[in-house]
Length: 301
Image 1: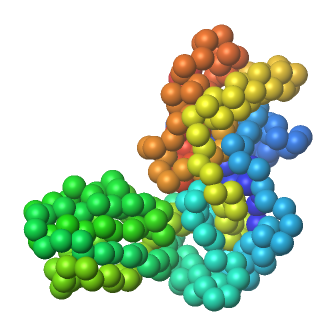
Image 2: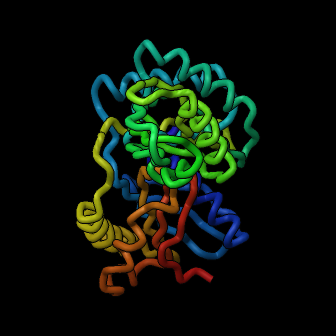
Image 3: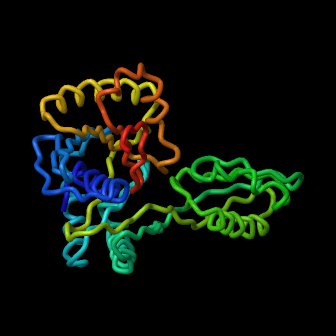
């Protein structure tokens, strides 16, 4: 198994070799700085994380789940990206079901593939009135709340706070709404129901045989923009100093974060809002999130 920085580095290697068409050689590590040769150039990567690895019992339980999944899958490198506010089920009840679901999905993936790990959640709904056609939504279904309009009869309050991440594909989101609409149609005014649904966590398989890796944190607070900007400024300053000492031709700052989707990160606006002199020392500044690498600024040809 890899630590969280090595997971980010693995995604960087795949991105580099696709973009540059030059493989990276053996990688040497010194703390959070990694160096490797790439043809006639030497590349240095400073890796910074927006979240701190957990410690204590939670981390131990996560490591035990990773080891159990690694042993069951034998060969391969798998990375599960848990949404930042989702509850990773490391204790019973829930742990055995999580292990089973992750194992079965991972076993079907080929290197380079990714899929949604479906995790069961329960939603609460109350029908308030028979008139109108409106659903007030809390939680993970807020992005599609308007899709319920004119599809239901009445006014409803839908508590979807247990659902953190919808699948990215529109057709899958439409199917979720369609299924919920059918449930809502059976309700009478004043009635409450508990509905079954599924959270969608990203599971990917990478090249190599480094076991099952869970990218998660027990923190419950999202990465707010002000805190992200403060940390980004620190990362840029620290990484510039670190990489200047390596004497390498190509310098990369790689930032690791936990976001629902790479498309919804707030790192890009943070970095680009700084004085360009802060990121001028780097050939590329990029974000790793939700199983993808997203360049933020790049001068690589």
